[in-house]
Length: 168
Picture (cartoon, helix red, strand yellow):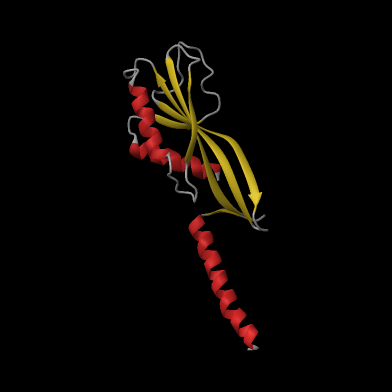
């Protein structure tokens, strides 16, 4: 599921913000020598900081995931104040958006000032998802799919429940 969320975010950033050079999974890329930045600027890194699951029935799981979106901008690639505009645009396109059944909800942000030549803007989001948790397969369940499933079950129960009560 995290792969699905990452791919949706990456596609959204690529479609809406062509000035972003790359979107990657974060795995400590900010640990490097100050002489050589190992990625193009500006770049967005995605980090899944915490994932919690809750089983809602035998087959279905509900997940809550915290997503950190990090905008890295190297000094000299654009005016240093433009990073604020770019971060605002990035947050505008991600907040209250989602294509996996949940919505990105911005819950916090901070600026990382640990670098001399690199601006890092971190924004934290929370989002949810639902999955089928079978041993043989795992597939995405969107809210629309689940709502349709429960609607059909409700209609069947109402239809056959009335016949049972009437003795048919």
